[in-house]
Image (cartoon, rainbow, N blue to C red):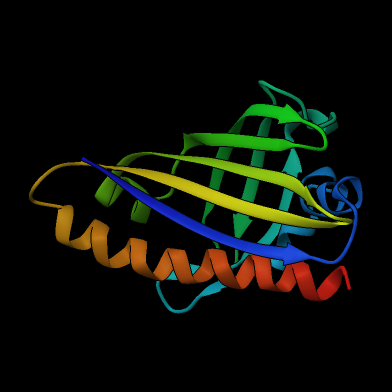
Length: 156
């Protein structure tokens, strides 16, 4: 079973500016994604493995504020319209309740402002872990919305 999550925000800036802030600067994720304590840790730092640029196929290492690390594989990087990734290596909490997490951010012009929509598909392990996956996903959705709200505040 897959749990689908979505968060969105309208940022009063042009699409290319918002995309650059949200997806162009990898370590900006630490500023925006503060998590939802105590179960969803914020991001402490993020970087593209090997120091390269963000592009399809790139691996991104994300260090969380709880001391754990995960790796994401960029599956789509279509500046300034879309940025997608999935888990290449999950932390223990993620592995407990899911087999993958697949993300897509889209950026659309709304008359000079930008609508950002962040979708996440959480592929949970099965019936035994579904209650945990559902509970954690509700908290994760709040963390997603908080992240987008932080982005909107920073880009005003």
